[in-house]
Image (cartoon, rainbow, N blue to C red; front, side, top):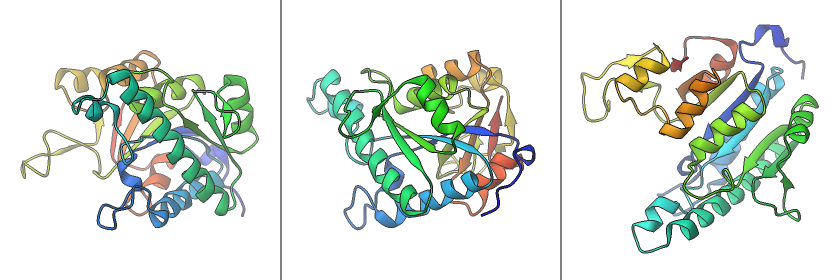
Amino acid sequence: MKKTSARKLKYRRVLLKLSGEALGNRDAGECIDPRTVAFMAAKVKKIHDMGCEVGVVLGGGNIFRGLAGAGKGVDRVTGDSMGMLATVINALAMKNAIEAAGVPVRVMTAIDMPKIAEPFVQRRALRHLEKGRVVIFGGGTGNPYFSTDSAAALKACEIGADALLKATKVDGVYTADPKKDPSATKYSRLTYETALEKRLKVMDAAAFALCMDNAIPIVVFDFFDGRALEGVVTGAAVGTLVS
C-alpha cells in the first residue's frame, strides 16, 4: 500500500494509549475479545500505512487492576505487579492481531521476560520505529504505584513522540460527565494550566505532569468513532487537544 507522505501528518510519531477494559467483551464473559482486538489492530495499521510511527501502551484492567485488588485484600505492590503482567498479556494479544494485519511489530517490556518479549532499551525502541515497526510497550513502568497512563506518558517522552493519543469511549474532555450531566459541553482545545485549574481528569497527575513538563500534547478522542484516529494524526478537529 502506498504510504501517505509524512509531511501530510500533523504527528509523525505518536504514542497511542489504549485501555485494557476496551479489549474485553463483558456480555460474552471474555477478558480479551478477538474481534475487538482485530478492530483496534486495523486502526493501528491504517495510520501506520499513512507513514505514522506508532508506539502503543495498553492497560490491564480487563484482566486485573492493582488498585482494585488492594481494596479486596491484595497487597498493593503484589497487586500492581499482577496488573503489570496483565498488560503484557494484552500486549501479546495486540501484537498477534497487528501481525495478522500484515504490519511488523515488536513487544518491549519494562519487566525482563526475554522468552516472551524484548526488554525495553530506548535506542532499540527508536530503531524499531525508524524501521517502520509498531512497538508495543508492556509491563507498565516496571514499578508499583504507577498507572499505565504514567507508563504511556513516560514512553511518549522516551521515544520523542509528537503527541500522546489517549483513546477512550468518549469523544473528548467535557466540563462534566456527559452521561450524568446533559448540559456538559466538550472542550475542543485546552491548555495544561486550564485542565489543572478546572481539575479535569485528562490523565492521572503523574502522567499529566510528565506531558506538561516535556511539552507533549495530549489528544483525547473516541477510538471507536469511524475515522477519528486518522483524523487526529492528520490534524483534523477531532476530540480534545491539551497542549
